[in-house]
Amino acid sequence: MSGVPLVAIRHAPTAWNAERRLQGRTDVPLSPEGEAAARSWRIDQTWQGYRIIASPLARAATTARLLFPARTIASDARLIEMSFGDWEGKSLAELRGAPGSDAESRERMGLDFQPQGGESPRQVQARIAPLLAEIAIRREPTVIVTHKAVLRALLSLATGWEMLGKPPVKLKPNTAHVFTLGVGGTIAIERMNIPLTVGDTVGPHPGPLPVGEREGDGAPLVPRMRSPQRTVAADRNARALRRRMTEGEKQLWAALRGRRLVGYKFVRQVPLGNYIVDFLCRYPRLVIELDGGGHDRRSDSDEQRTQWLEANGYRVVRFRNTDVLQNLDGVQERILEALGQLKRGTASHGSTPSPQRGESRGEGSS
Image (cartoon, rainbow, N blue to C red; front, side, top):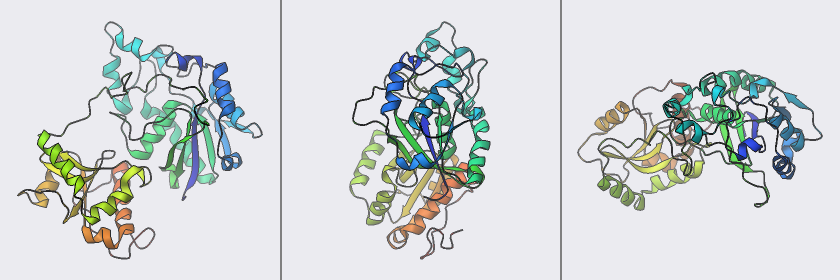
C-alpha cells in the first residue's frame, strides 16, 4: 500500500438509528444494543498500533473507546457529523411527506444539498480536507471513528462522486473502510466494507437512508440517466458483445472488474446513445475503448464517436488490443492518470495516447 493508511469506521448504533431519525449534531449516545455491537466488533490487529481519532459526539467517542480500550483516543471536531439543522430528530419519510415539503428538491442538489439551518456535504468536505492533509504530513497511519455523512464525504473525495444518484460504492453497516492519503491529503480507496462482525450475530445498523436515496430499495431520487436514443436493441447487442470479447478485452476486464483498480467501479459493453462503449466508469465518467475490439462502430469514425461522447460529458481513453496484451501495467497506469485528471478537473479532450512498451507504474509514465 502506497501513501498513508486511513481507516474510517462509523459509530455503533443508537436509538435514533433504529428509528431512522437524522441525528446530525444532536449528541445521541449509543443504545445498549449499540454498545453490545461495538464490544463484539473485531478489528484488524494492525490498526491497534495506529493513531486513533474520534468525533467528539458521544456515539463516536464511545465506539472508539470500546474498540481501542488500551489506546489514547484523540478528539477532533472536524470529524463531527454533518449538521441537519431543522431536520434533526426527524426521519426522511416524515420530511418528504410533510405538506409543502421541499425535502426532495433539496436532496437533488447533491454536494450542495443543505437542510434549512444545516450544513452541506461540500462544507463537510471542506472541514475534513485540512485534517486529511495533516494526517498525510505526519505520515502516521490513522483510524478515525466518525459518522455516515463524513464517510460519504470521504467516498466523494476519493471517487469524484457528486452525490447524485447511487454511490459508486455502497457503504455497508458494521464495516470499516481503508483509504490511502497522498501529498496534500489527496485520498484514494484501498478497500471498502471490511466486515467488523463475526457471522450474523450483530444486529443491523440501518440509520436513516442516505439523503438522495428512497426507502426500501435504495434507488436514487434522481433517476439514473438513460443515454439519448438508447434502445432495447442496443441493450441486446451489448449483451451479445459481452459473450464474444476479444482476448485484449478479456484481460483488461479481468484487471478492472470487481473494483480491482483501486476501488473504481467499471462496467463493460455499455450502450451510450447510438454507441456501445467497451468499458465505462460512471464516476468520474471515463470511457475506455480498445481499437480492434468486438463492438460494432457502424459507419461512424472514431473521431465522431469521441466527439459525441465528450459532448455528453465523458472522457475517452483509447488503446490498441496489442497494448493490453503486451503492456497491461502501462495501460492501467494510463487509466489511473485519466481518472486522477478527471477528479482534479484537469482532464483534456481527446484520446489518451497508448503507453510505450515497458511503461508501467513508476517506469517513465507521464
